[in-house]
Image 1 (spheres, rainbow, N blue to C red):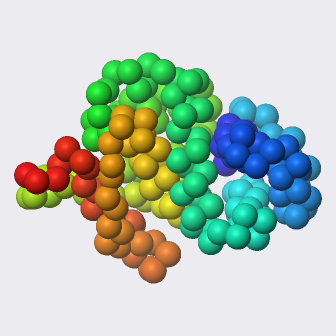
Image 2 (cartoon, helix red, strand yellow):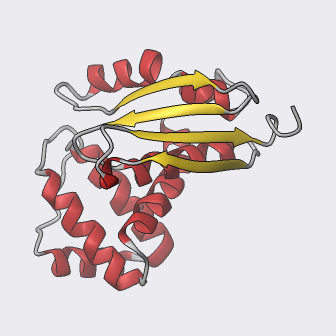
Image 3 (tube, rainbow, N blue to C red):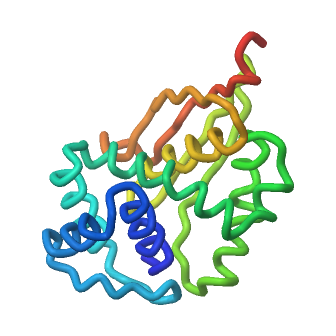
Length: 183
């Protein structure tokens, strides 16, 4: 996993809970915590940090990942405003992930192993989002979408229809946004 993801987690933790909490998470996880944004680190380091945060913050690991995704979004908006300013709502923003955002991520962070997203329109106007990654960080993906919705001043409702953690080959989310409701 690229160091930039660890850097984001560190910033989210420090902003919300202070430097001492980040240091405590590193200690609990048995990690040194020196992550350079361009470096590559074992996925298990993230797993250890999520489990340490789960214990420290009294949250389930999936809730830690969602919290992280939501908290990282304002940081990403500050760092990469052009990704966000090109859109006026959440739906077109997340639809740009495969075609615009992830190719840019690969340019900046060569070797980045980004998840695969597929999107389909549901007959009722909802968006079906398929997520596939060997890391199985579907809760983080959900948190990122929730954070994007907050950025655009929208509410998003998630239904997790299929999940890799339950043996499915990919996760499938049914997303309905405030602008989709009532169609």
